[in-house]
Image (cartoon, rainbow, N blue to C red; front, top):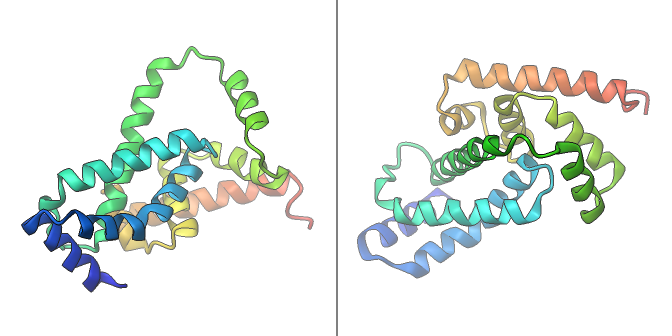
Length: 181
C-alpha cells in the first residue's frame, strides 16, 4: 500500500464521499499518528487518543483541500502538528496548575520503564519545534523535506531543529549516565 493507494482513496472520499476509503486511510495511519502524539505528550494516552481523533476528523472534513503536492502522510502529519500546537496553546491558559503534581500522577498511572521516562524527561528540555522535528525524524522516519513541509518551515530550519535537538538530547542523556553504557 503506497502513495498510489492513498491518492486513490483520497479521490474516492473527496469525489464520491466514500467513507470506506477514508476508513482505509485511517487504518493505515492511525497507529503512526497515535505514536507521534504519544511521544509529543510524554505518554499521555487519553490526550494522544483525543488528538489523533481530532486529526482524523479534520482530515476527513478537509480532504477536498488535499492537492497531492506532497504525500498524503505529509499532509496528515501537518494536520496532526497543527492539532497538537492548538492543544498546547489552549493548555497555556492552565499554566497555574502544579506541573510536578501532574507529572507524578501520570508516572504512577502509566507503567513506563525508567529508560522511557528518562527519554521523556530529555524530550521536555527541547523547544517544542526541536521536539517535534526529532520525533518526526527518529520515531516516524520522516525525511528532512517532509518535516519541513509538516512544520511549514524552510528545509534548513528543519535540519537545524533536528541537529540542535539531537545535541541537547545527547548532553542530557550523557549526564544521566547513558553515555557510559
